[in-house]
Length: 209
Image (cartoon, rainbow, N blue to C red; front, top):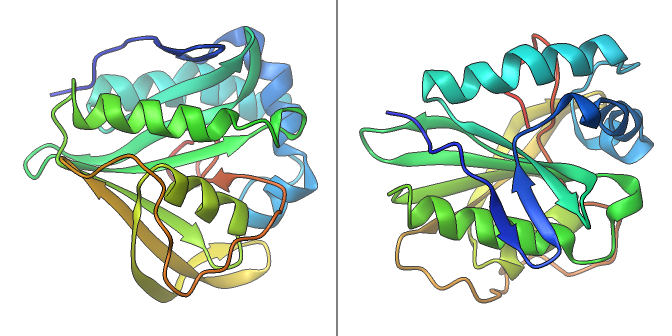
């Protein structure tokens, strides 16, 4: 089984296949200090890293049935990445990841993208559960997840890694039938921080965005 290779439109936001023309935007984003803080990206992130991601990794994820990678476009311009990965078709579950380019932050783009992509996956694609794993302290990404109806399930201690070392990971999920309205994550305070960032395109270091 595999995901339908569809374009998802939400007003001025579009989720579409990643294109060669996105290469410069991906490189610029993945060199951003905020993305480098939260993600285990190559440093420096090069045009070759982006080329391999666009031409090999993203298509292979879709063809294998393991997931689907979509570029987030805002007013037809590249704004970030969102994907489903680690899909288990037997239990019909997958992990979601997302990040936003520096120039697109603060406009609600990722909230709209995440809500639409989640609704599409739990609806048209027949998934039963979507999980999101977010490093402790990445408040912007947590806020996006809760605004899209994801439920905080708990904290996995020292379960992730970035350039700073081991990090604790918050687990969020939405299952079929859950509302997409905002939820309050118990014990997690809201804050205004750059983001959101959960997962990213990278070479030979695990799943793409």
